[in-house]
Image (cartoon, rainbow, N blue to C red; front, side):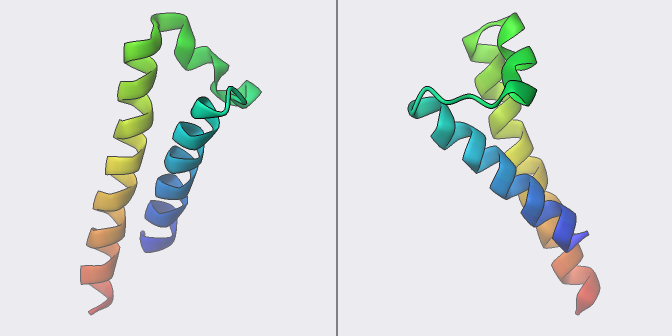
Length: 62
């Protein structure tokens, strides 16, 4: 779980950073069909979901 969570956090953060550089990956272009606000909500949601999974995985390992 921790590995999946960290991967989601990294991908979400990378998508946010690439958006500022106007280099959106092709695989993420579909989220912009619903508008800029929805795209931001999806990207932030991926980061938050990744953080939750990472913390759950960390507690399970202890």
